[in-house]
Amino acid sequence: MKIRNLLAEGIAPENSANVHGLGIVEVLSQFDGELPAISMLEEAIEKGEVRVGEVSQAGQVPFLTVENTGKDPVLILEGEELVGGKQNRIVNASILVPGGSIVQIPVSCVESGRWDDRTYVFDTGKAIFPAKSRAVQKESVTSNLREKGIFLSDQNAVWDEVRGSLNALGIRSETSDFRVGRQKVAHRIEEFVAAIRPAEKQIGAIFFSRDGILGCELLATPELFRKCLGKIVRSFAFDVLSLENFEQNSDDDPSKWWEDVLNAEFTAHRSPGDGLDIRVHDEGLIGSGLRWKDVLIHLSCFPSMDSTRKGHPSSNSRAAVTERRRRMAGS
Image (cartoon, rainbow, N blue to C red; front, side, top):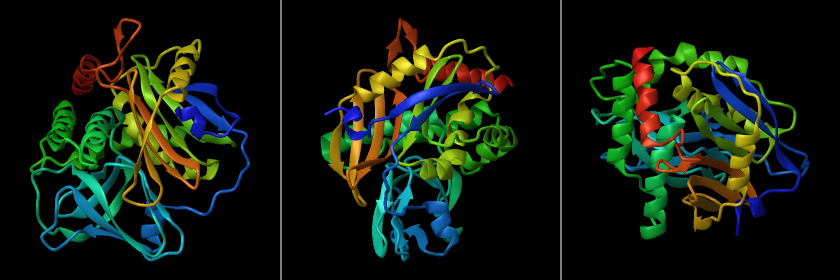
């Protein structure tokens, strides 16, 4: 089965724009079907309906516990940053936590030099890990899930991504905390967030730069996309901070890449929460998502780290990533 088989009819890329060097193609939907109410993690935490904490007093690096005392399911996005506990983490898969339940979620550490109870509970970082680093994380989680049935990442590869980002930004963090790097460039990233607003029927976007495709993000409804847009933009903006603006004459390349995503085969796996985890890892693509009640609730997809298109490195290839980090360090 292909990704297009999971989507309703009338979903298509439309208008394109360029904001501070970040290219965006809106993905719009004409589907008016209803979906049961879903809360996002930050709003559930603010209401006091969700508590994210270590699995025990001793804690385990690759797992956290989410308790949802509310009545609505809560959506946690793959790559979502969680701040607090014994060390800051990011989530390894998109997970829907049912109302009135406790779910153990798989995570990766993004603060390798700390293991103490700064605070037992976690808050949302209101951001998602940078897109190109999510591609690295996603590849290892997908491989482990398909081969071993576990949602674990290559933790060393994630730490390499954190160190690379901190080094590129010229930051020294005593605990190798990625959040320290994000905070240094937060004022620049928020310029992207302030400038990008969702269209009326927008449920997703394809992001690109002058280096090529960065990836895409898709939510089930315009309301969910609107709630997630700020976090999504922060993820992709981080990777274009060192890039200049560019002229976009056509959206042919993003549209062609979108067709590749739609035609990609996927595997389905039981999610740690409610629904099915979806995995794409072929034909130069790495993607994952969550299907619930026969609806694709979330999909994120990137060029795979080793893919090439038209004989040139993709925007997520090792060469392109190294070059972006070099420019970031010099900016």
